[in-house]
Length: 293
Image (cartoon, rainbow, N blue to C red):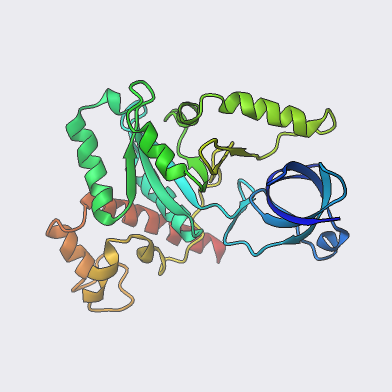
């Protein structure tokens, strides 16, 4: 009986479906996982032992680089953070919040500005420039004109990704544009994997033809920042160099004297809307800390 390696693409009712070089293998987890209170997650890289061509047991779970609670998934490489330039109007605070959530979970954010056919190129470029200047990857897309779809595929290639963002921004349409048969594939895989036995809705990694996986469910359904107020400033990348110029090492960049970040905002070196996002999120974190004690 051979041991092989694969990635869990679906888990339901005690069965785990592992994508391997030999195709999908239906696995059970060894008893030691229950004993050690370890639950295999979608996205886990696992060692399995085959008992037949299509059935096996999970022997070991390789170390996880990250783990999300909602959706329950491990080893995500990047979050494609989708916001529409219009319809619905872009919420900059929420965009910045999801960026912080991604980075605090060791997930690289890729910002996707969708529905660019609805606005002037000048407005789109202005927004893109703000985030590119900070050092983020940004792609502008339109499902209607197909602009940016190939660039988005470039970012998705050979990565485990999920799409995050508010409803109505076009996440599902984008996924369908990336791979036209992905909905069909979801249906086929589910039918093949379920075999009429398990019918509960589950998280699933969908395989991309050009390499990589995309999660079939939006991420970060619980948008709670679990970050200490002293740490939030480190997730605004444009602050990092400038806050060295603050008089106090504990400076939170609100109203402290001789603050390098506030000076940079006033001089136009830091985008004012980004700074407003920081202050809004800082208030949220402080309120959460108050409720805790």
